[in-house]
Amino acid sequence: MSRHYLDHASTTTLRPAARDAVIGWLGATGTDPGRMHAEALTARVAVEEAREQVAGLLGARSREVVFTSGATEAIATACLGVAERGRGQVVPAIEHSAVREAAAKAGPVTTIGVDRVGRVDVAALVDAIDPDTALVHVQWGNHEVGTVQPVAEVVAACRERGVLVHVDAAQAAGHVAIDFGALGADLLSVSAHKLGGPPGIGALLVRRGLRIAPLLLGGDQERARRAGMENVPAIAGFGAAAAELTGTGRLGAEAAEQRRLTDRVLGATGSLDGVEAYGDAGAGRLPHLVCLGVTGIEPQAVLLGLDRAGIAAHSGSACSTESLEPSPVLEAMGVDAHRSLRISVGWDSTDADIDALLGALPEVIAGLRALRSAP
Image (cartoon, rainbow, N blue to C red; front, top):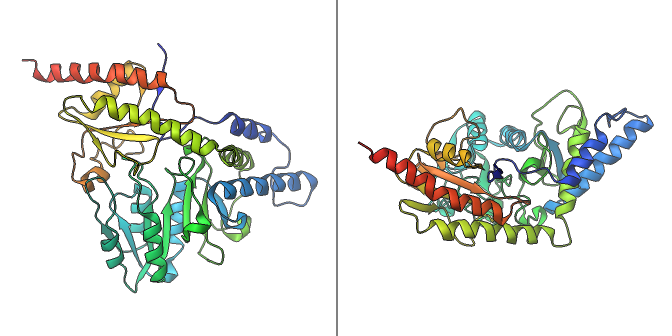
């Protein structure tokens, strides 16, 4: 049986160019960029080239890019690095758990509600800012339902009030155009494995002139903003993936194809009994993912049924199989937080993947409902 991977929002396929870049540095001699010998200087050049490539994809200056182990570390650095500016943080209820939990670790959190499609109430967010607010958070696009947030409006309001703002762009980077400089945000976090780079590497963009306390201490790497020897193979892979998406219309073409595929899912599942789309089903969602509510059936059963049919998908906002809690995102939206199915495509997804899903899903749902109604 052929397999069809439709969980790209969790982690997407490694791009060949990124794989080649990683392999090229694995096993290389002297890959500590902080030394003065020729081998180390070669590694330093690779790191700085990758920094420029990532900056180019995200519309940033290269010096604004701080490499981290991923978006989770980048987010923690943003949340905990602003302590001297105040204790409070403002967090929309649909933010990723990495944001919600790191912000709570830093101090008091004011949680802001969203509407039924998962879009933040900007007026409520602005009203929550007070003299003790250190940081305001806003996603670029939601990791579970795909709804795009009014990022520019939030950033402008925060700048007007002199409050720092952090944008979690982990789900959006590589799928929509991002211009950090034009946006005017203070901090922005991304993860390479969401856009075709290797796992274990990400970045925090830090606006030029802004100083925040480092999360990791012990060395002067990353211009004293993140201690620890740089992961040169992963950084090179991240840079290669970013370079592939920069210029020549590659990002726009991939996004258009991903939207076409996810539109097929929305169009075909809209007529299924007890199935509804969550989030913004139109242009106000990220192109590569859709979230469906499936009435009356536990999500684990749907996922197992699809898996037996050769299809990998995801349910809820949990980042691991250990969590069976209802989705905070869907709870905040006021929809069924226990029964959802997230379908997400990537740069190498095809119509065959969607055909397999659309063939299997009605059968899986019908079979599970028959079991429920059996005497």
